[in-house]
Image (tube, rainbow, N blue to C red; front, side):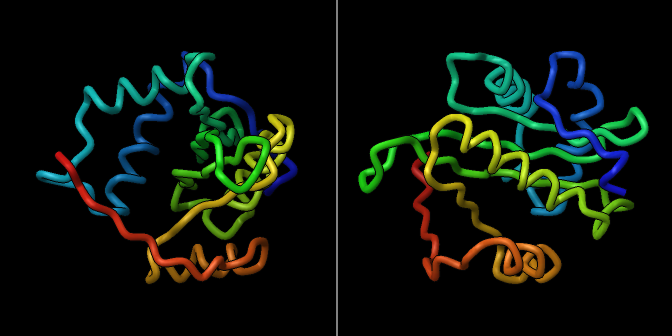
Length: 154
């Protein structure tokens, strides 16, 4: 499947094809009701991906002319490294194509983009119970052993 798969930066005209994937990603993480991502936040996020002054980027996976996945990355500074580091915030493959190399191809593309930008590390997190994704992650990366805490401020 990866032979016919193209990974490329998102373009403005991809919004309508990206949107259902984004909705699927948010549904997977049960972001509904009060925790739903608003339309305003969705449009702001999309605009950030396309703004060369923002540290956020989106890469999309295209198969047979259709978008079938995405990866969203954020570059930032780090107190223990001279160069930037890259956070892989969101990764999603269309359910019908899971297990066919889309996720791996997107991670590899994110790693290549991070390397191109001078980052020494690409890192991400996932839910502990996301066993399917963790099978891939455990093959291609190291579990840092850190537990993520967060404090919502608004």
